Amino acid sequence: MAVPKRKVSRMKRGFRRSTDALKQPAYVEDKDSGELRRPHHIDLKSGMYRGRQVIEPRDDS
Image (cartoon, rainbow, N blue to C red):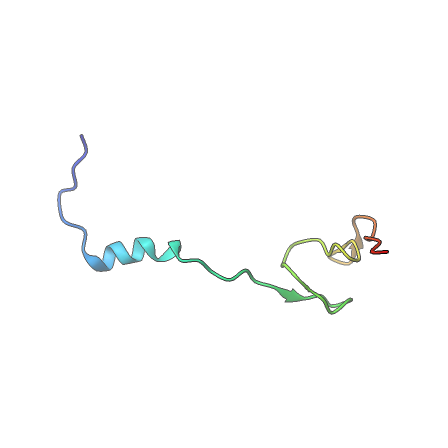
């Protein structure tokens, strides 16, 4: 069975756990519509991604 040779210090343990914290998702303002969207995601209202029409625009009637 694997057993640690030395006790892990509070600092090293904290470094390891620092990525466990919950972070707010990032949003960017769309250049064309001005709406907020996630970076590297398709704008669902217009259907655009990186200046190209990827999907049909959503019709909110």
